[in-house]
Image 1 (cartoon, protein in one colour):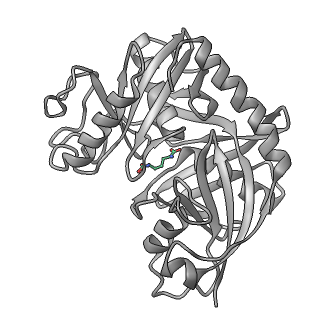
Image 2 (cartoon, helix red, strand yellow; image 1 turned 60 degrees about the horizontal axis):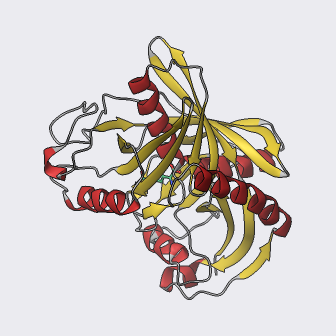
Amino acid sequence: MTTLDVLSTHGSRNDILVVELPEGLPITTDLSRVVRNLCDRTGPLGADGVYFVEDPTGAAEALFYNPDGSRSSLCGNGMRCLGRYVLDRRAEESATVSTGPHRFLVERAAGEGGVPRTAVSLPPVSFHAPEPIVAGVHEWFDEVIPALGSPLGFTALAVPNSHLIAIVDHYDEKELVSVGRRVEALTETFPIGANVSFVQPLGEHEIFVCTFERGVGLTLSCGSGVIASSAVYSKLRGIPAGIPLTVRNPGGVAKAVFRDEGGRWHPTLEGNATFVSRATVSLEEAEAGPDFAVDTERFDEEIAAYAELDRANRARLAELGVTI
Ligand SMILES: N[C@@H](CCC[C@H](N)C(=O)O)C(=O)O
């Protein structure tokens, strides 16, 4: 029997499982299937994705899977939590984690009210996506996409995963879900799919962002969506790199800031990295179906500390008239 140690974590209540790939993993293992079962919300764990990490104290190679079993080059919120896991394993303050050609620098950041936080520096954002996000073109900046049937202007960018961002006057969840579903269905127009975010400005340097994620659906937060939204908002409002933005999601608050290097914007995402529980799962059972047995230990203090921040964010959003 192969055992998986599964750490349930969240970054702004985007629930991500962090799993160190065991040595001697059978090569016949269908990881996509394991992920679908681990993430199944009717099962004992449930999540918005799984980050596998190989050799955390050495090369630290990470692989991210969405709950539908598809892969992505990044989960920003997950990287905050996986980053904390890697830093703890190494007893260090900063480390580099890789996914294929992409490098992510993770660092511990100052905690808030007993809530541990990390900062992740990402590769530069690209408004000229290497793989077209809108079919046939490498750039799409603040324009209506006729196939979507929405009057909103969208911007396509890679951070490095694919995003479509629209700035709205008032956030409307139904509209976001309907656009997200159309992006999912229109595979000829959006050949690699995209995470879709609506951005409602709250103040000069403060925004609300909600994301319909590729391979998931609506989530309480998407870290790469926070970065993509901040980049688009800053470009459209003429906010220079170096000015941090406060980004509120339904699940929490993060900070996004860019460093300009020769015209290329290098983002840093900072926010909570909360450990919720640790479970031991049999790989064979998790591959067979979603009703596997788990042996769980909960981190109650961390959960309680985050609940305070969550309450404060929700109260602030209600005060600002954002309906979530
Ligand atoms: N939740 C994530 C993004 C996860 C991957 C995404 N759904 C995709 O397919 O690109 C985040 O925090 O960035």
